[in-house]
Image (cartoon, rainbow, N blue to C red; front, side, top):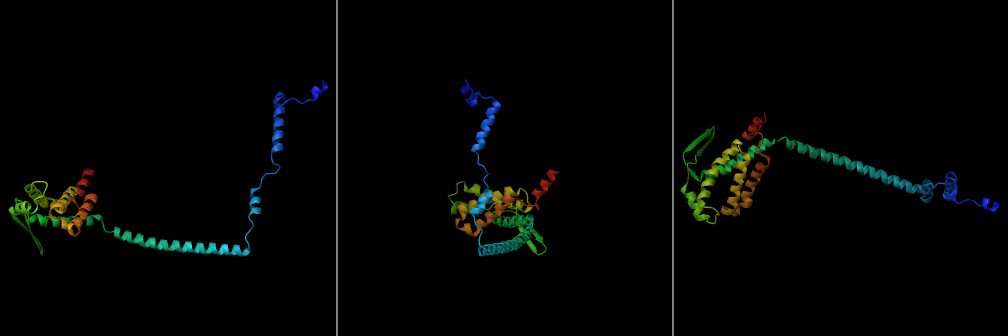
Length: 239
């Protein structure tokens, strides 16, 4: 009986507090006695550089710092110059650019349309500038004849093309000058330009038509600017 009493009980048969105490003692025995010091380990595994190497590294860092500062200063000066140039260019308002494009393209198509129509002339004179505009009462017969004889592969009837283009080259430039329905006028004249390029003057792509298309695309995408009836109508509509 005494031997049985001296034999320790299994862990699961002990009370809860004693079982937890035994488990804590066993875990403490398995744990390392001293914590691992990573700082001391790194210091012992990586020896300090010699004074000559340390001086060379310090010199390299100083040279790199001076080069970075010099590059930063040069970039800042270049950036200031670029920003100043861009700011100077921004002083030219888009309203003047759009007005110039509208007048140039209106003159090109209006003068071409005057050669295709017939009607009474209205003289315009401002100081030393004189100009006579012809009202489009009818299309000239030679315009029809030229389309019938010179450009037969048109996909639509030549008479219809002659009539539409002749009147369009009178009305659309007027809209461009006034800045009224500018995007519609630019899109219509761009279509006329494509028609001229494909069926009338295919050899004039890089000499004429590409410049017309570029100017008309600017007006089509950016609008007529503030010096236009479109802008005035927009301001009135927003009130």
